[in-house]
Image (tube, rainbow over all chains, first blue to last red):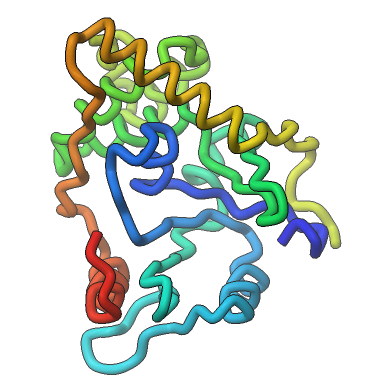
Length: 161
Length: 65
């Protein structure tokens, strides 16, 4: 994507948690945010990814049959545009290019938003553990983002262990 | 191609440096709390039909995650 002059697609979700916790969660599916879905999926196809087909396989995602990994574009903007793209963590993979991962602060805020929805109680502990591992996170930004994602119900103090 | 972002992205951190930083954090966490870092997995309650189908396809390809 970068060689096309496009920003790197951004990894979000559980795979991003894995990145920030050094594999404490293992996942084989990768949620991606990019405004250039068609171009990204062209690149996936070029790397051998295919879209599963058949009954019960209606998915927007792509899998690599040999690597046994899946990618899915879940949005065209980071957290509906509320996350600061400038804070995306870029990781230089050498000859393999550059990986872009949602910022730690935005990921914690996303966890708290899911927790606040009442459908994902485990997300509170995910957020707390991630903050405990990254105590130097930008508290001011995280406070703003958690408040936004949780409709004002939660803030930084709620993720402090 | 026309950019859909208005600001330059930050400079990438080398993978080795990123990994070393995480190793340090994990060691500090274990020293602070007295046990290795762990984090609860997603319950999967919020998976979309598309995500469930994707995970099924990965599993059928032999992926166990």
